[in-house]
Amino acid sequence: MSSFEQSQLNRVKRVSERAAYDRETIYRIVDDALVCHVGFVQAGQPFVIPTIHARDGDRLILHGAASSRMLKHISERKDICVTITFVDGLVLARSVFHHSMNYRSAILFGTGRLIEDEEEKWRGFKVLTDHIMPGRWEDARQPNRKELKATSLVAMDIETASAKIRTGPPVDDEEDYELPVWAGVLPIRRAILPPIADDKLNKSIVLPEYIEGYPRKD
Image (tube, rainbow, N blue to C red; front, side):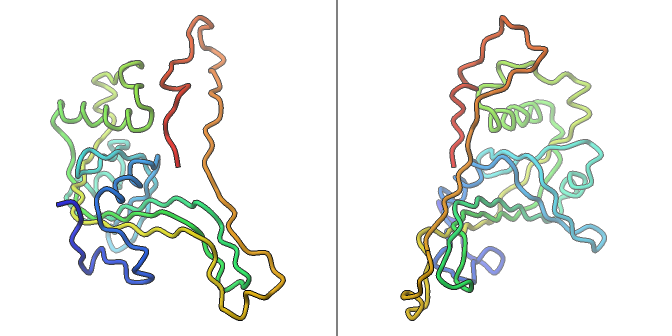
């Protein structure tokens, strides 16, 4: 199925014309992000934790310390909610009421499990590493057994999801278009700056092409 079925859980209710339920749109937002926020309830207390993620097909890989409260919760196969947001611009209207932002956001729902199989865990680390920096897994030293034991990985099946996206100029009340107030969009973009070498780096080591040509885009 190329799209998630709409339900009470994932349906966008406010400004529903900005919603998207197709996997291509949702997964593009997920794959472009370096950080997600994981929401869960433990003993009646809600928590929202930022963490690194990577998508592996229709599941999300999350990692953290073995003692992580979040990962322990997920590994017990309890419900979680994952959100990702990009702000692409400030939308400046003629009236304060109609100011807005251009954005891309995704919300994912599912349950997770602890990855215990060593081969699957190894693959999960590779997926995470290559999501953050494609090409790094094969270049850097890979985890040893002690490091594997100290870090937990969980896999969350993406059971349902939706995206919400705003683009374009401000929309004012008709009578406000004559106001002598500047209106428009102030675009916001991430910038990848030149790499800064570690002071202890051996001077004979050249910058890898996969870092110099880092492909992540807005």
